[in-house]
Amino acid sequence: MTDTAVPSLRREILVDADPALAFAVFTEQIGRWWPLGEHSVYGAESSVGFDRLEVGGRIVESKAGAEDAVWGTVTTWEPGRSLAFTWHPGDTGERVSQVAVSFADEDGKTLVTLEHSGWEVFGELAAQARDDYGHGWPLVLGAYAERVAAA
Figure 1 (tube, one colour):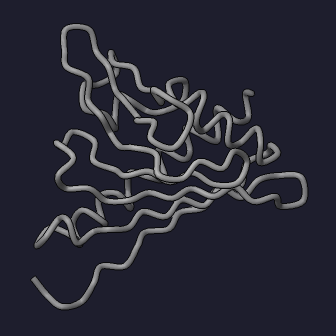
Figure 2 (tube, helix red, strand yellow; figure 1 turned 60 degrees about the vertical axis):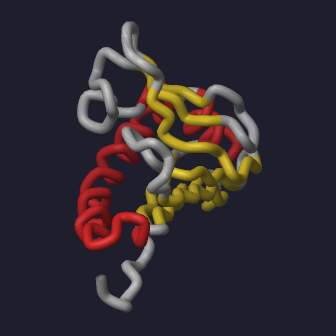
């Protein structure tokens, strides 16, 4: 492993909603917009949601006949402003990165900024993991933006 830290990954998207609605769609409706067919543990036949809408709540993917897959645990919960959670979909939770999402008013719309950090947990594969998520988050945020537009 090198001494150079892998920088956090930042993605932004502007959605046509106020921050309160943008936050609600991201959290309360995650199961309606997350692209499970492309980015999940169990595939399109599963479901995903927050088990509690508060700090300590978990993002959980479920599928009939399978053990629930915990994707992460909420560490920050500020409705309409910010959300942060640990991130380890498909992993035991021993190797955890972090995701922070902020919601800022931009002239009646909301700038949603997602920052994914903590790549060092992937060891020698840190740069590859960052690159993989660099391709995945735009698809996820695009699906989210479509759901916000329909809300």
